[in-house]
Image 1 (spheres, rainbow, N blue to C red):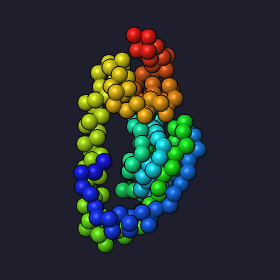
Image 2: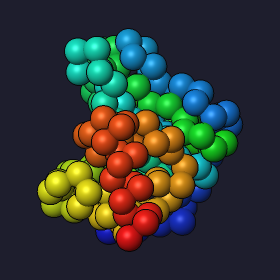
Image 3: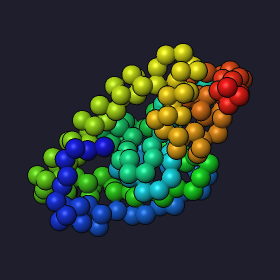
Length: 182
Protein backbone atom coordinates (compact mmCIF):
# COMPACT_ATOMS: atom_id res chain seq x y z
CA UNK A 1 0.00 0.00 0.00
CA UNK A 2 1.43 3.38 -0.98
CA UNK A 3 0.01 6.84 -1.41
CA UNK A 4 3.14 7.92 -3.28
CA UNK A 5 3.49 7.01 -6.95
CA UNK A 6 7.06 6.84 -8.27
CA UNK A 7 7.94 7.75 -11.83
CA UNK A 8 7.64 5.22 -14.66
CA UNK A 9 11.44 5.30 -15.00
CA UNK A 10 11.86 4.38 -11.33
CA UNK A 11 9.35 1.54 -11.64
CA UNK A 12 11.08 0.22 -14.76
CA UNK A 13 14.44 0.10 -12.93
CA UNK A 14 12.76 -1.63 -10.00
CA UNK A 15 11.10 -4.33 -12.09
CA UNK A 16 14.31 -4.91 -14.07
CA UNK A 17 15.83 -6.13 -10.78
CA UNK A 18 13.06 -8.63 -10.15
CA UNK A 19 13.07 -12.38 -10.66
CA UNK A 20 9.70 -14.13 -11.03
CA UNK A 21 9.10 -17.12 -8.74
CA UNK A 22 6.18 -19.54 -8.99
CA UNK A 23 4.98 -21.19 -5.79
CA UNK A 24 2.84 -24.31 -5.57
CA UNK A 25 0.19 -24.68 -2.84
CA UNK A 26 1.73 -24.80 0.67
CA UNK A 27 5.25 -24.12 -0.65
CA UNK A 28 7.42 -22.11 1.74
CA UNK A 29 8.91 -18.84 0.47
CA UNK A 30 10.88 -17.92 3.63
CA UNK A 31 11.07 -20.60 6.33
CA UNK A 32 11.61 -20.29 10.06
CA UNK A 33 15.31 -19.82 10.65
CA UNK A 34 16.11 -18.97 7.02
CA UNK A 35 18.12 -15.86 6.25
CA UNK A 36 16.63 -14.25 3.16
CA UNK A 37 16.97 -10.45 3.05
CA UNK A 38 15.14 -10.13 -0.28
CA UNK A 39 12.07 -8.02 -0.91
CA UNK A 40 9.06 -9.75 -2.45
CA UNK A 41 5.97 -8.56 -4.28
CA UNK A 42 2.95 -10.80 -4.63
CA UNK A 43 2.12 -10.66 -8.33
CA UNK A 44 -0.77 -13.12 -8.13
CA UNK A 45 -2.09 -15.37 -5.37
CA UNK A 46 -2.00 -15.29 -1.58
CA UNK A 47 0.72 -15.86 0.99
CA UNK A 48 0.37 -16.55 4.71
CA UNK A 49 2.70 -15.10 7.34
CA UNK A 50 2.86 -17.27 10.46
CA UNK A 51 4.86 -17.92 13.60
CA UNK A 52 4.92 -20.33 16.53
CA UNK A 53 3.69 -19.38 19.98
CA UNK A 54 5.04 -22.28 22.00
CA UNK A 55 3.78 -25.31 20.10
CA UNK A 56 0.88 -23.46 18.46
CA UNK A 57 1.11 -22.14 14.90
CA UNK A 58 -0.36 -18.62 14.66
CA UNK A 59 -1.30 -16.83 11.44
CA UNK A 60 -0.01 -13.27 11.72
CA UNK A 61 -1.26 -12.02 8.36
CA UNK A 62 -1.96 -12.56 4.70
CA UNK A 63 -0.31 -11.03 1.66
CA UNK A 64 -2.40 -10.76 -1.50
CA UNK A 65 -1.73 -9.38 -4.97
CA UNK A 66 0.48 -6.25 -5.08
CA UNK A 67 1.59 -6.68 -1.45
CA UNK A 68 5.26 -5.95 -0.81
CA UNK A 69 6.82 -7.98 1.98
CA UNK A 70 10.04 -9.27 3.47
CA UNK A 71 11.36 -10.82 6.66
CA UNK A 72 12.31 -7.80 8.78
CA UNK A 73 14.71 -9.91 10.87
CA UNK A 74 16.54 -10.98 7.72
CA UNK A 75 16.49 -7.68 5.88
CA UNK A 76 17.18 -5.31 8.77
CA UNK A 77 19.43 -7.36 11.07
CA UNK A 78 20.59 -10.25 8.83
CA UNK A 79 19.23 -12.63 11.46
CA UNK A 80 17.14 -15.77 10.91
CA UNK A 81 13.45 -15.32 10.15
CA UNK A 82 11.11 -15.68 13.13
CA UNK A 83 8.04 -15.78 10.90
CA UNK A 84 7.47 -18.12 8.01
CA UNK A 85 6.02 -16.94 4.71
CA UNK A 86 4.31 -19.66 2.73
CA UNK A 87 1.86 -20.09 -0.06
CA UNK A 88 -1.79 -20.88 0.64
CA UNK A 89 -3.89 -23.37 -1.31
CA UNK A 90 -3.66 -21.65 -4.72
CA UNK A 91 -0.68 -21.17 -7.05
CA UNK A 92 1.09 -17.91 -6.37
CA UNK A 93 3.59 -15.84 -8.34
CA UNK A 94 5.97 -13.45 -6.58
CA UNK A 95 8.68 -11.09 -7.74
CA UNK A 96 11.95 -11.32 -5.81
CA UNK A 97 14.30 -8.35 -5.53
CA UNK A 98 17.61 -9.24 -3.83
CA UNK A 99 18.76 -6.88 -1.09
CA UNK A 100 21.91 -5.77 -2.94
CA UNK A 101 19.83 -4.60 -5.92
CA UNK A 102 17.32 -2.95 -3.62
CA UNK A 103 20.12 -1.09 -1.81
CA UNK A 104 21.59 0.10 -5.12
CA UNK A 105 18.20 1.54 -6.12
CA UNK A 106 17.85 3.23 -2.73
CA UNK A 107 21.32 4.78 -3.11
CA UNK A 108 20.78 6.07 -6.63
CA UNK A 109 17.15 7.20 -6.58
CA UNK A 110 15.49 9.64 -4.20
CA UNK A 111 12.19 8.83 -5.93
CA UNK A 112 12.61 5.12 -5.15
CA UNK A 113 13.66 5.79 -1.54
CA UNK A 114 10.61 8.02 -1.04
CA UNK A 115 8.35 5.27 -2.42
CA UNK A 116 9.90 2.61 -0.13
CA UNK A 117 9.51 4.90 2.90
CA UNK A 118 5.88 5.49 1.98
CA UNK A 119 5.33 1.73 1.76
CA UNK A 120 6.87 1.28 5.22
CA UNK A 121 4.46 3.88 6.61
CA UNK A 122 1.63 2.02 4.90
CA UNK A 123 2.63 -1.13 6.78
CA UNK A 124 2.30 0.72 10.09
CA UNK A 125 -1.09 2.01 8.99
CA UNK A 126 -2.29 -1.45 8.00
CA UNK A 127 -1.24 -2.87 11.38
CA UNK A 128 -3.49 -0.35 13.12
CA UNK A 129 -6.25 -0.88 10.55
CA UNK A 130 -6.17 -4.64 11.15
CA UNK A 131 -6.50 -4.17 14.92
CA UNK A 132 -9.58 -1.98 14.52
CA UNK A 133 -11.30 -4.04 11.80
CA UNK A 134 -10.47 -7.60 12.80
CA UNK A 135 -11.32 -7.24 16.49
CA UNK A 136 -14.15 -8.11 18.86
CA UNK A 137 -15.68 -11.53 19.41
CA UNK A 138 -14.68 -14.35 17.06
CA UNK A 139 -17.98 -14.26 15.18
CA UNK A 140 -17.64 -10.51 14.60
CA UNK A 141 -14.02 -10.93 13.45
CA UNK A 142 -15.11 -13.58 10.95
CA UNK A 143 -17.94 -11.41 9.61
CA UNK A 144 -15.52 -8.49 9.21
CA UNK A 145 -13.07 -10.75 7.41
CA UNK A 146 -15.84 -11.93 5.06
CA UNK A 147 -16.72 -8.30 4.30
CA UNK A 148 -13.22 -6.84 4.05
CA UNK A 149 -11.10 -9.71 2.70
CA UNK A 150 -13.25 -12.37 0.95
CA UNK A 151 -10.15 -13.30 -1.08
CA UNK A 152 -8.57 -14.68 2.09
CA UNK A 153 -11.64 -16.70 3.05
CA UNK A 154 -11.70 -18.41 -0.36
CA UNK A 155 -7.97 -19.09 -0.61
CA UNK A 156 -7.11 -20.32 2.88
CA UNK A 157 -7.96 -23.56 4.67
CA UNK A 158 -10.40 -23.49 7.59
CA UNK A 159 -7.59 -24.36 10.02
CA UNK A 160 -5.55 -21.38 8.87
CA UNK A 161 -8.59 -19.10 9.06
CA UNK A 162 -9.13 -20.26 12.62
CA UNK A 163 -5.50 -19.43 13.41
CA UNK A 164 -5.80 -16.01 11.77
CA UNK A 165 -8.92 -15.26 13.83
CA UNK A 166 -7.33 -16.59 17.02
CA UNK A 167 -9.76 -19.46 17.65
CA UNK A 168 -9.57 -23.24 17.61
CA UNK A 169 -10.61 -25.01 14.40
CA UNK A 170 -13.65 -26.56 16.13
CA UNK A 171 -14.80 -23.13 17.35
CA UNK A 172 -14.29 -21.70 13.87
CA UNK A 173 -16.44 -24.47 12.31
CA UNK A 174 -19.25 -23.63 14.75
CA UNK A 175 -19.03 -19.92 13.89
CA UNK A 176 -18.92 -20.57 10.16
CA UNK A 177 -21.89 -22.96 10.34
CA UNK A 178 -23.89 -20.43 12.38
CA UNK A 179 -23.21 -17.63 9.86
CA UNK A 180 -23.89 -19.81 6.80
CA UNK A 181 -27.24 -20.99 8.12
CA UNK A 182 -28.55 -17.61 9.30
